[in-house]
Length: 102
Image (tube, rainbow, N blue to C red; front, side, top):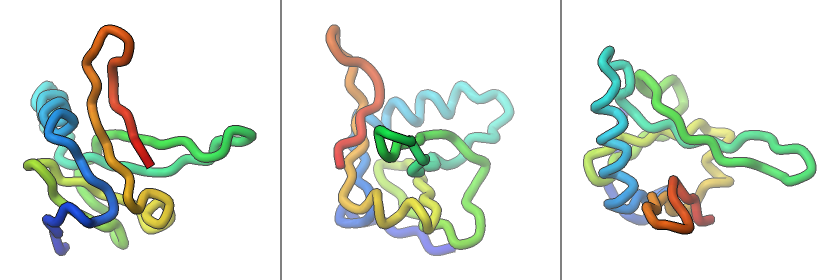
């Protein structure tokens, strides 16, 4: 498994998002959440939807990268659709949660 650490890779993770992801992973008592999986999911009339979730690790053919201490895995189907996306975490009064800008 090759881990790539460059800001010009498939997706960019902001430091706010990375901090929140590390916080959420630390809450997993089993330690089964070791990577962030980012994927595209079919969405019907609205088009694709983004999926974020924790996984135990990469599987065959996943692209793996590391940013801000978070390992991110992306399946080969989702990779072309995610190229250039930025994952951020907003914590404000009007907007709160993860935001993917693509």
